[in-house]
Image (cartoon, rainbow, N blue to C red; front, top):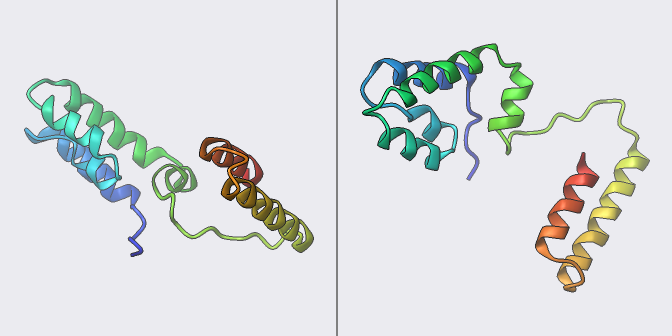
Length: 122
C-alpha cells in the first residue's frame, strides 16, 4: 500500500510541539523512526528530547525540500530528468538484471547485492 509522502511542515510542527508539551518524539513516529520515537518518549521526563525536538523542528524548516525527501521519503516517486540518455538507462537496467541473477544463484550475498545496487543507482 502506498503511503503519502511526509511533509516538512507537519514534521516541524510535531517536533516543536514535542519541545513544549510533556510528551516528545511524535515527529519521530511520523517520520518512520519508531525506535527514536520510543527513546524520546522514555526520556520525556528529562529536558534532552525537548531540546532535541526544538532543534530538529528548526532543521526540518530550513532543510531543502529535496534533502528532506531524500532523508524521509524514500519511497517517493523519482522524477526523471529529460537529459537522461535512454541507452544509459538500458545499460543500467541490464547491469541490475545481471546483479540480481548473481544474487539469486547465490554467487553474491544480500549485503554485496545491496552495496553494488546502490553504487549502480548512485
